[in-house]
Each structure stands twice: as C-alpha cells, then as structure tokens.
Image: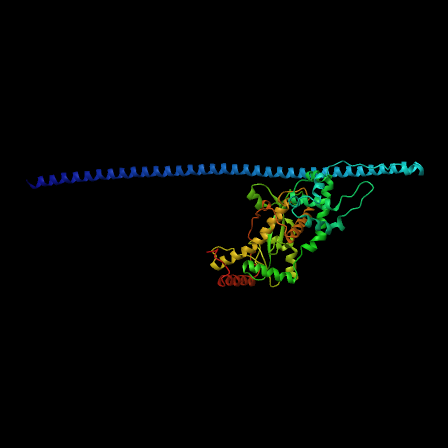
Length: 488
C-alpha cells in the first residue's frame, strides 16, 4: 500500500469519528431536555397540590369558625333567655308580694270597720242590753295546725322531733327561752298572737328542710306571708341576740385549749383556727348579675350558677369562731379574705400575732395564714407538711358539710331575697354552733361532702418571714417523727 492510500484511509477514519461525536452530542442534549421537562412537571404538580391543600385548609377553617360562631351565638342567646326568665320570675314574685300586701291592708281596714261598727251597735243597745249583748268577732281563714300541735305535745317522740327540727326538745326549748323577750307578741282585739314556740318552729323547720313557704304554711296552719315574716323575724333575733353569745372569737383561755387540740391533731403548733370558704346558690339577682356569676361551678356542673360566699373559721370541734357572709360568688377565696372583718382586725389590731389560721391553697401565705406547699416536685419534707396541714383543713370542710347537711336550705336556691340572705345564713351558723355545743348529732343520711373548686391565690406569698416559718415547721414535723408515712 502506497502513501496515497494511507492518507485516504486516515481521512475516512477521521470523518467517521467526527460524525459519531456529533451524534453523541445530539443524544445528550435531548436527554437533558427530557429530564428538565420531567422536573418542571413534578414541581408544577407539587405547587398545585400545595395550593389545593391551602384551599382545603381555608375551607375547613371557615367551616370551623362558622360552627364556633353559631355555638357562641346559641350560648349567648340561651344565657340571655335564662336571665330574662329569672328577671321575669322575680318580677312576678314581686307583683304577688305587692298584691298580697294590698289585700292584707284592705282586709285590716275592713276588719277595723267591722269592729268599730259592732262596738257602736253594742253601745247603742244601752246599759241593760250591753250586759247580755254578744261581741262580734272577726274570723280568719281556718287552717289546720294539727301537725304542729302533735309535735308540741310533751309525749311526742324525741327521735321524730329531732328528725324534723335537727335538734332535741331541750335544745329547742333553750332557743325559745333565749328569744322569748324579743319575738313574743301580745294578743290583739282581732286575733291571738302566735306562740313563741310556734314562731321558732316555723323558722327552724324552714331552714332544716328548705321546703317552699307554701308547704311551711300547710304544716303550721299559717298564711304564706306570715311564715315568710316569721322566718325573717326569728333569724334576725338569732343574729342579734344569740350570735354575740354563741359565735365569737375565743378568749385567751379558749385559745390555749384550741392550740393544744390542733397540735394534738397535726403536730403543728400555735394553730387557732381552720378556715374555709363555701358557696351558697342563689337565683340570678336583678342587679350586678356578673358579680354573682360562679364560673367554676358553672363549668363543673354545665349549668349556669350564681352564688354568694360564706367564709368561716372553726375550732377543733367544728364550732364557728368567725364568719364573713354575703360577698359575691365571682370573688376568689383570697379576695373574700381581704374583705373580711377578721383580716382587718389582724392587719390593724394585731389580733393574730404569733398564731396561725390554716387555709387551703386558695389563700395566700401570710404572717397569720398558713397554707400548704403548692409548687410542683415537692420534697419529702414538703409532702409531709401538706399531709399534716390537710388534717386541719379537714376539720373546717367537715364542719361546713354538717352545716349544709343540717340546714338543707343552704343546698338549694331559696325564695329569700338577696338583701335578707346574710341574716338567714348567719342564723344557720349560730344554730349550727348551738347544736355542736350541745352535742346534737347529725343523721348520717344528712351528711354531705362539700365541693368548692379551689383557685390558686394570685399573690400566693405575702410574707417572706412566714415562708421561713413554714419551712421550719415542715422540718420539725419530719425530723421529729410527726409527719407520718402517707407521703411515701
């Protein structure tokens, strides 16, 4: 092969190689374009999916907001309807009271006219006829009081009497004797006065059973308005006459005895009282409705609740030594405490220097108020302290349980007007003390467990020195073997 043939062969090989390289470049470019199109398609699909999810999410949010708005509107409408119902009901009762008052006034005027006319006729008959003439009398509606006459008999069973009036005959007679000078009335020309025993019985039976005045009227053979008036009169007399005697802050000798008893219960020294605040249900008032709205009871019972508060301090036997009655149910325990006379006396008069009143976590820790530890992750010492202070808290809670169990009117909304309710509640506390002092037991069926939702005090620590004193008490309880093992 000559040189010319070699050159021709090399040219042909070079041409073929260049041709192959061009074809390879075209195929690579086509592959990249295909992948780019696929990638753009995937991105577009993802964007579309994301937009669809956003639309679905917005639709769900709109539906939820609409449903929430409907529920809120329904709740608001129901609340408004309920408040209007209570307002109309109170107006209805007010109108009935006014109508009864007008009727009684007219009846008295008519009766006085009849008596005056009869007296004139007798006078006109002359001296000869006046001796043999018969005085005309005014008659009232005949009502049966057979039930009370039966209860008032000397041979009436003691157990039945105690079941009806929550106390023995001797305790009942004691109360009647104490109130006799205040509530006794004299006979008049028109009618005989209601005896003292019956007056007291009407009040106590009403408080004990919580029955409406209509049933009280049937039991005692008296008018409904008369029963209502008697209840308020006797409760007012109990508060004015018996409260200073049977519900008062202990003297020095009594305080020493109380300290010893509480220390025997818990091992905690210098405790002079156990404090608790409970709620009494009421009908929605006409004014300041929001102030009496009890949010905690409403949420727990799923039923709108209104209440007023009763704060009480008790001794180891469950006898009240101090009460604060009538603040609205929307107030927390620490707010009620700050409004109480006990707080003012402790703040200004030094009533509680060097002693403790034990409360729950709803009260703040102060120089004279001792409360349990409420933070998380308690130490053994703190657990032990809470266990022992709980035994003191239990005394007050059980005392309120007996109070409400003995006087059932405290468990339901009553017909008593809001302005008269503190007088009635004060009378119940005094009667409770008398029963406790006279060792009047309570039927186990009447005992109830008091449930009041506790809220942590907003400012739980009011004194650094009291914090150190509590730590010292907790340390002594644990290291002197007084704390028990319930916390382990």
